[in-house]
Length: 110
Ligand SMILES: [Zn+2]
Ligand SMILES: [Zn+2]
Image (cartoon, rainbow, N blue to C red):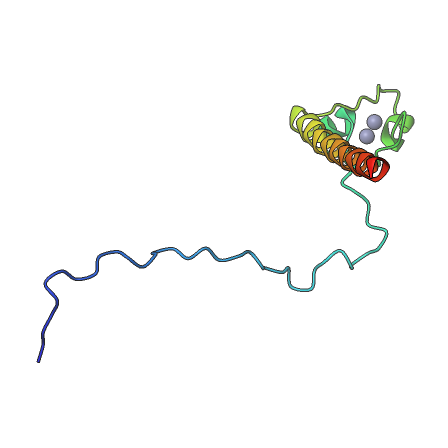
């Protein structure tokens, strides 16, 4: 009794199932080192020398030891990131302000 349906169900079931990303870094979370600093930007001098820059301002330690200009440059990507972040933040603030304002208006009118 091998009665196959004339029209087998085609690709009805989804080939890809959206799996929510719940991947957790195996224990290597931000817990390791509470005083973990951000990745410091190396100045141009340290970069060209490929030495570790302590990110000191206005001059890093390496540039203090050497009579060389200590120049930090912000990459365009970083700047863009900051800009976007700032935008989102300001938008959030604006939304919150508007919310509060509308709420206040309702409160006052009622
Ligand atoms: Zn440096
Ligand atoms: Zn420097």
